[in-house]
Image 1 (cartoon, helix red, strand yellow):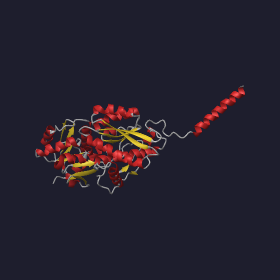
Image 2 (tube, rainbow, N blue to C red):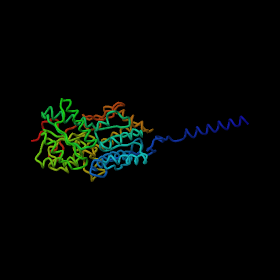
Image 3 (cartoon, rainbow, N blue to C red):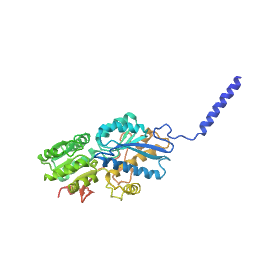
Image 4 (cartoon, one colour):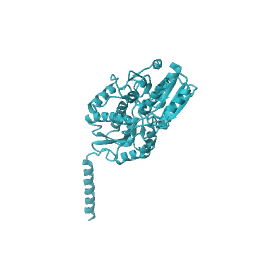
Length: 398
């Protein structure tokens, strides 16, 4: 009886081994948001509200690249599906939007928009141990200290403000620089960048004034800064608030050199401000979308025309496209047995990578650095178009 029982046990074990050995591989079976043929990515951005242009265009750019990859067979045999949710650029809606994506069981997050919301989302991603890749904001709090689950692509606001202040100070000789900024985390982040950049020259802002975020109630801030007679003024905000700043300032006959950061949404600013946008200097973190001599800019134009033919190319959707390129490169490097940690490690393995955006935009990551680019491209609005320049003397008001 004992011998018979032993034979039955051994036979059962052998049968189990045969079944296990003959089963097909279940790549990523235990990774949330990953199936045999699909990877779910979640996004929270402003799809509604006054800053919806930034959110919808970011998502459009990301989807254009995902569609391109899916038509080529996906990533390691899996198609990418982006679940985009609205937070209306409202910090009060961040928890609800994040919880919604978690209920959808997404594998990773990406293409989030705005500093006031990013400062809320970053600790959520850290706590949930879920990758958050590609945020449309350059706030320093996203870069320092290093956060394992947060991966930035663009240059920071500190990079942008340093480029502006150095150009104003060294080339134009402008020493009196003012700042008009919204009373939120975005405004504080850019203001701090200006202060640090000026401190390197032994100076500080000549004058600063804030206005209520997401409003056109900017008259008081304009009067305060104008009273100090600065030579240049950094105006902070999305297009729907920077445009009123420019219009009201010019209506008062005040025309210093105005500058702003990439977050403004250059093309929307040109549309909303019209002639008042002429001469404004905007630092960019991706090349102008009409520079199709760069391989990935040309690819973006083709993809946008194919999948979203009614959409016009712009800086915002191009940045969403570039962020999606980084996400996909990390997914490819993570391999078929996909895990969230594997995605982070895949991105960290990207060194001196030519993304096809020009010789100065090489992608670099490591376990100690989660900022892909640090290069900034200054542009000035001329004839309704953002024109890049390298000589800051060309930016002086005519």
